[in-house]
Image (cartoon, rainbow over all chains, first blue to last red; front, side, top):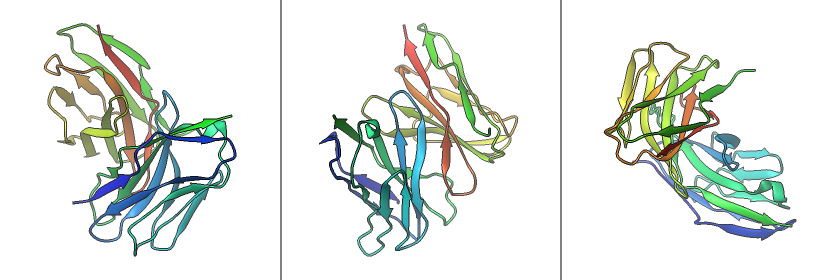
Amino acid sequence: GNSVTQMEGPVTLSEEAFLTINCTYTATGYPSLFWYVQYPGEGLQLLLKATKADDKGSNKGFEATYRKETTSFHLEKGSVQVSDSAVYFCALSDRGGSYIPTFGRGTSLIVHP
Amino acid sequence: DGGITQSPKYLFRKEGQNVTLSCEQNLNHDAMYWYRQDPGQGLRLIYYSQIVNDFQKGDIAEGYSVSREKKESFPLTVTSAQKNPTAFYLCASQVGTDTQYFGPGTRLTVL
């Protein structure tokens, strides 16, 4: 079956530091890959996505590249802000027909001023 | 604006009570989902529905029930059989196998 593994948190950084949150996956076929963000007390919202190998998704300074050879989709940001503090979820969607996406357990990011 | 609404934002349940959480979407999506989120935990799928008048159990359906009488609506009932219902409940919709769109959530607390 499909699975998503992401690094355990919390990840604690100072403002303007470089961020990497690792995500690896196993899937049959060629999934679409997603990063969602959840701010405290809210629902998840899409941050970025990539639908095929070597695609780079980007939004709000965050980037992630779909690496088929390493089955990875690591999230990066060059300079984090306090407002980036949230929980980040990596996910995949099997375009082979399953309507149920697979989510990682989430990684909490805490950014200090 | 298109989106998903959930109500109420906060809900309190007494022992032995059934409570119903509302989820409405105006995105014209066929598929809708209910997830449960516990502190520090990921998402666990309760029920999902791909079309009107049809739904399937997810990983933790025991103690919950749903209906899908309209495309726009997918209410979740937490029954008295659910022994530990205190959690954050998230509703989502999806078109095809693409992005999921989430509501703002309902926080349920057992008194």
